[in-house]
Length: 114
Image 1 (tube, rainbow, N blue to C red):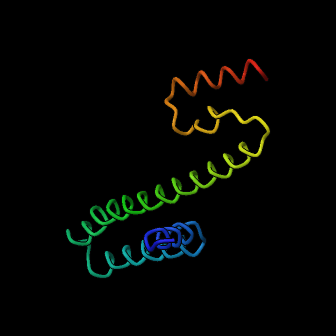
Image 2: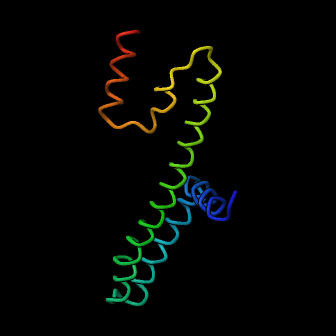
Image 3: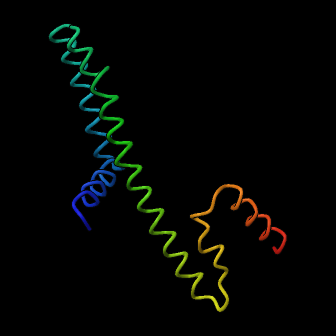
């Protein structure tokens, strides 16, 4: 596994823990306490109004990467199971590469056969 995958996996694993919630809660409390102690200046306000959306965007990118990677791994495992069948339907194996209309047609095909 390359460095980016290891880092994104570690971040997503940590982001889903109670500890991460605690860290975020502590940061919010520290930010609020700093506002009370030093006064609610423009810089104090900008720290959150600019910093939080940037951090949120970065976390969303990392989480999306991890989600895409996990979905691809599941898809590969399902493909392996389908290929183990005596007569696999290649359209089902390639379903992840089909467009919406083709997926709808394939879904209707299997609904009729169910």
